[in-house]
Amino acid sequence: MPTMEYEAVIGLEVHAQLLTESKIFCGCSTKFGAAPNHNTCPVCTGLPGVLPVLNRRVVEFALRAALATHCHIAPLSRWARKNYFYPDLPKGYQISMYELPIAHHGYIDLTVAGCPKRVGLTRIHMEEDAGKNIHDAHGDASLVDLNRAGVPLLEIVSEPDMRNAEEAGAYLRSLRAILQYIDVCDGNMEEGSLRCDANVSVRPRGSSTFGTKVEVKNLNSFRAVEKAIQYEIQRQSEALNAGGQIVQETRLWDSEREVTRSMRSKEFAHDYRYFPDPDLLPVVVETDWVNEVQASLPELPTERQKRLIEHYGLPAYNAEVLTARKDVADYYEAAVRAYSTDPKSLSNWVMDSVLRVVKGEKLDTSPRIADWPCPPEHLGTLVRLINEGAISGKIAKTIFEEMRVSGKAPEVIIAEKRIVQVSDESLLAAQVDEILAANPDKVADYRAGREKLLQFFVGQVMRATQGKANPQMLNALLKTKLAEKN
Ligand SMILES: [Zn+2]
Image (cartoon, rainbow, N blue to C red):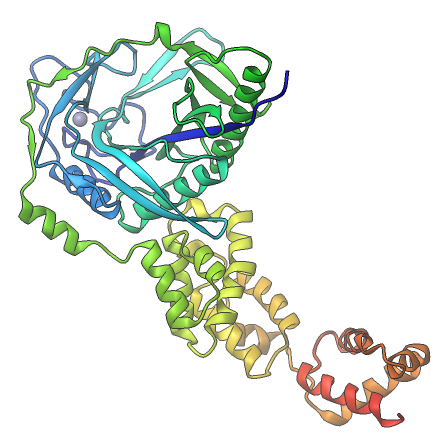
């Protein structure tokens, strides 16, 4: 049987935990890390006789997210009860939105592999989070912590517009960046403040009908999202090519073994028996409020990207990397404020040195730039010192490492370590003569036309001077001396 070529159809459902101080329907704190059941009250523990009161901030955050993703705002939306039984859900239902969400029909514009791509948003709605079950390691007991019950969430549902894992990854990164820029969610997937489920199906290339979709859960990193989608596309295509059928079901991603596993079939899925919540009034959003929120929106990632390219002359790639996260872009621009002469070199330093440390040491889980390797001002000074010829790029790398450890300013480190660049021409000339005398073969080769050997001589002198030779002066000296006897 000839194998058919399949095309994937992917949609993502994202849950974003909102950065409000208090919960969605009561005054309890949303702070993470409190003692179990410390941040609770009769409302969020679902005691009888209490009534929920909507936190206005949650609606404002939903509006911010909706406007930043070009959604239509519903003038009237309605709360619904989603009924199911689980120990972490004390009321026996979750307050969510169903047939009338607060926002719908938006989109996010992406660039994937250099090509523009628009992904539609079906809807955005508000809902409350559930608590957390903690299972005893010995299996004797399960405990329930309701600190998270009632923490506000946004559910953001995309259209099935993505065709491969790369597009899904780009969409999720872009959505996270937007939510971070507008300060509604910290975007931390590892800690669960941004959660993603993927709906994946395949169909014969060229077909316009949808195949049977599978929902993949437990995706707690960007890598997991992309890997799981790739796995599903392959699994489903192979199954169909072997004459099998796809079952509509929920599957869990196993990040250890890098496979998805069947969790439950949709035939047995819950019937949530949604119905309008009688305890809460519909949410009515007036145009004035929408306009006010619109006016308060900050510069968004794509706009900032454009500005960095136009303003600082950065390559598109650099601008993309730097604006993917607001804190990184803020750090970069603070460094440019400290030394505005060379924004391009600063962008490379942030991307190569700062982000390497930030990612390697997982400092990016902290929203505080103050916890990063060095203050942006120090990075500005470091690049200035290189450009002024006070230190070489190589020495600068050493100083950067020292800045990380001690937190000291580059000038202080230079003074303490007595790092002085050798700019004394006669001293340097003596070193050059020594190196040339020690490598007669290479000198001959160079003179015979192998001009690439210049780098070899530069390296040798740098080594002899422990990297302290002034690079411009050294290059000039070497070229003159190598040309002399020609
Ligand atoms: Zn409460």
